[in-house]
Length: 518
Image (cartoon, rainbow, N blue to C red; front, side, top):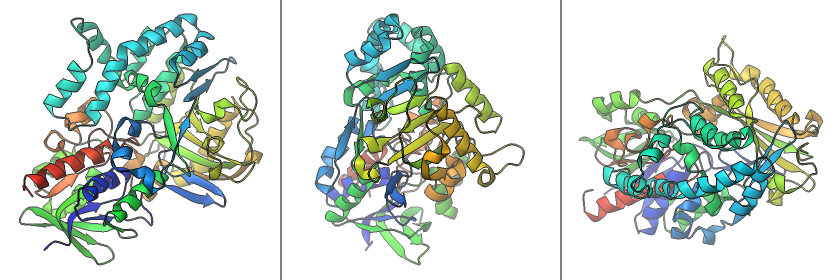
């Protein structure tokens, strides 16, 4: 008899969501994690005394478009979300600024200070693309079958008879779309910078949908778990153990065991053998194939070897600060700007120049940044009169030109990120820094298992999304080995703090259990 109904490799948020649904359904699950704590890229640790740092994702946006928190009753396991509003704040070199609020009217009032025409265009943009954005969320929350894609993205978009014009816009790059929709470079840059968070540069064809889901921000906004982003995964772990599940940390999986072409368990570095009726991998798809070893079908291995991980694209500096940034464009600290994600990107041209540096395998000389000062909404993150400030920057390649190594240049690049912020908030001098953690693409690979520093696992390009993620033959969360299932950022819908891949994979496994396919 197997030890468990399901053995889950990795304890990232998608893997934990999957385990949570199986445990709630009455199945005996085991989660096996290589690090000392659960969470993967959704973890919070006290790196500097008194300061809680998120090591990966910080803003929980898309998970609130799923029923996960309610389905799994996570509020009972110490998960308490705080609304973050305004959502975005963007200062500009000319002294202007923009706010994006959850409330559409307040947002349009802010935009009107820069461009009355864009304020009206923005209102029409939200109304026009809201149905499609909602259709994309429904697509994220289901397996990417042809039926579901047609139902949610085509019929759900509600284009009607005049479908040719919207389709023509969808196949464009988001840079082209935004330049042709809005007149102000400021609004183009703000929406474009958020679209870039999924990976594609402004000029990439078929990338417009990354800007077209912008209307979703006006539905649920942004929320933060009290105590840090990692409280989500901590609550999932508590929920799983409450339902009788087992979680093994500090226990790296070294092999997915196959017998007669079927996955039957795992071997771990600690010498354990843990067996299950099924094995579910939340690890990177390339890591999963390595763990299968000789058990990986040659054709499947060739297909996965051909997928593009990408070259990383982001770096983060987690700061412990004794002062908040005081923006020239919106003076005074603290104020409502510090509740928001602070977007430092003056134009799409600026973003494209940063991407040009990335293509040349050098860190962006003038990086686009997001500053997150969430201790203003959650004082538990820092000691009194102090703050956390997280600077996320693009673009930062994993592989560097001229034989440079990240370990040798990380301090230089962290200094450049702070200097870039200082152009907008002159008080952000090095003397205001209590301490910091620099997360380069190499750090993200070493610490969180994100190969080549890519938080999305695989590039989020059209040929590696939806029914093609991670491959056409594996997009239904079933691996090409019997008894092995897939979840995590390598699978549909990709990266992000959403958990949909975990929920979708769980439903596939539960359906197969119910039909006695496994």
